[in-house]
Structure formats: C-alpha cells, structure tokens
Image (cartoon, rainbow, N blue to C red; front, side, top):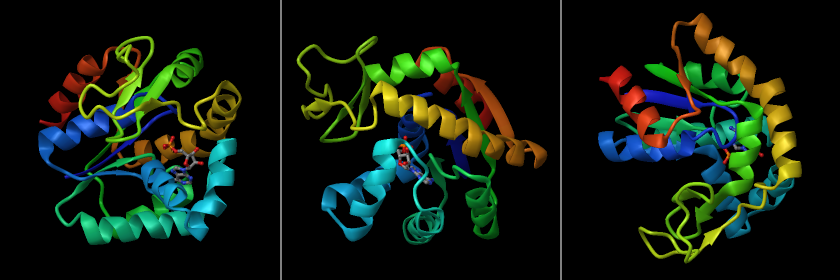
Length: 206
Ligand code: AMP
C-alpha cells in the first residue's frame, strides 16, 4: 500500500500518519521529519535547509526530492505513508516516475483553524508525538508515551504559520488537482477529532 496524506500545515496529517503506521505496520515518511533530523545533526544540508524552514518556505526542490525518493527506495520496499511530500507539482511528477500511489488523502481545514492549531501545537522531543494545548497536551509538559519534553517547533509561530499557509495555497494546493485529475484524491473533512478522521480514512482504505 502506497498512500500520501496532504493538507495545510497542522491539518492533522502527521497524527493520522502515525496512527496509520501503527494500524498497517507501514513506514511513515515525513519529509519535514527527515529535514528536521538533518538540522538536528548539523549537516551541511541541514544548515542550508533550516533557513527555508524558519521562514516556512519550500526547501530546495530537487535535493529534497532526491532525498525522499532515496529514503523510499532503501526503507520502504513494502509500501509507505507519505506525509508532507509531494509538496509541489514538480515533486508529484518525480514521485510518479518511481511509484504508483493507491490513494492521496487531503485533510481539509479552514485557515483560521490552521492558525489556532499551529500556535497550540506541541511536539515531543523524544518520540515526535504531537499534542495540542487546546486538547490533550499534558499539564506536566512531558509526553504521555515516552516522558520526553514537549516543545514548540521553531516554525510553529503565527508569523511563520501565515507564510506557510500562503506557500501552501500557492505551491501545494495545486498538487490536489494533480491527483484529482488522476482519480486518486480523497477529501477528508479535517475539522473533527483525530479519532473521527482516522475512522473515516481507515473505512475508505478497507
Ligand atoms: P512539515 O513538517 O511538513 O510541516 O515541514 C516543515 C518545513 O520543512 C516546511 O515548511 C518546509 O520548509 C520544509 N519541507 C518539508 N517537506 C518539504 C518538501 N516536500 N519540499 C520542500 N520543503 C519541505
């Protein structure tokens, strides 16, 4: 099974991808996580890409595409759940040269809701679990699964969030049209609980 999750920042695709990984035992490939790992390790590429991430801009397209495709090649022989990739029509074309996707889920939420969620999002430094201060972030500031510290991502502030939304509308929203034209796009209303969204996706996946 090869599927992709797309949608505006903080629409919940990361949370859904993690749940799908647990249910189907497929690798969850998040281009954002791959890039954050490069940044954390202080690689040359990480240093270069951090500037884009801090501004909420799309990073260097060709390099990121090569990196994600290499990852799929070496780690995902039995399928994958993509999260945050493809983010441009160029990336969608490049992905299609190597993989036939079974479905693409577009998790749809309004701009106001995106801003509320981004500024309230907290991420576990240890295992990457995602929480919301509006819903489920433990008051202790520590992850309920691994005890790791919950932090706000550098790019989860309002200014960067507004830019990420503008970039999404300009660069990523057309990717939905790309997959709609190929009969692969499934739109999922995202202004619901993670449990309801998950039930919807898994019912469609079968
Ligand atoms: P995300 O974790 O998906 O919200 O991504 C965080 C940031 O990483 C984005 O704002 C971009 O700067 C960069 N990024 C993630 N995925 C991609 C991609 N597929 N292509 C280009 N830049 C990306």
